Image (cartoon, rainbow, N blue to C red; front, side, top):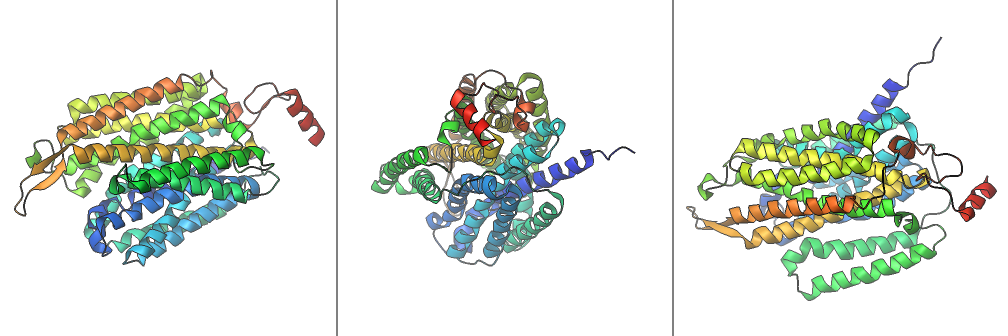
Length: 499
């Protein structure tokens, strides 16, 4: 009697892990409908209320590589459950909040759950059969965008028709359900590494990232030339250099900088920053165009709920396109998929110049941008995992996810500055209101197209085609490293001795 096929089990694992990734990315869109009302809801100023967004960004940036390393050391499924637990606790804290401090604390805990996505990718590499790996990793990677696209209309509908606390109670319930499914249906990864956790490295990286991303997020409020902003940028440079020096000397580093300096990893991470920079305009601008009053001459006058519904199909586009990226990677290599994604992104922004005048046109160019994001994001883990050993996949994917965050954070600052300076005034019964101008949105389209084309040039510097299935599964020939290259004699001797 033949043994049962592993396909149904693999399908369940993929579904649960992708659902966990989408749930984590929902946390980014959850608060968007509340942004204009946050100062009133939390009884604080607009500048202080923005900490509810900034805290999520900083916590995600700090937690992602740290949780990835903990997963490599102590179990990826275990740390996946810890990350989901942080999401649930953060949601409950936010649901019980009526003032700024607990809301910021809850949002920080929600941000710390973003390690779910790189951990899920790493679990897939370790437990799925090779034939399912490419498409599954592509879907998991694209879940970062899918959750935001699908979550916006749902969050808007809840915020418009129910008490705003229901948003967070709902996210807590969804997180608890995902935790149960992961605990019951997802096996623990058999891949572990020895050694200890680099506490000094974790603290150094955390301090450096906070010093870097805090002025990027708040520089518009503080002033880009203020002593606080410039001082934090200088501190970030010093801290990250000191952290790098420590990591290079450490026998068990948090991040193996020598591995990340490999050309395939280094250039892929640089391209990731550029793609993150390019994609943010596609998230920020369409929803504003749809909601601005028709009296501006270019706004489309939709409500938040209808605007979200117009953009919801972009999440479905990403779900459909991410398996296509896996097929292109299998046939031509993940470099080709990533290059195609950057070029499709550029096409999406260029078509926006002619399509932004109608709701249907906004849907079309937003869908093209989403297709580009899906192609690019789905290819990145294959490139990263094709160049690092299986024992470092979680932290390497966490670092790649961090690069996305740096790109989107930088883009947020740049686009925010552009839209703040290119404005128009609209007369209302309550007095004139300052709004972003059509020229500001067109400048944003130009920035997105330029960043996409620059990303394409960076992708061309990635080494030639790898074999994504074998590399991602860690199935390399004896005498070769995880990138498929011949081992250096010293590394070969160490491997033989350890065996």
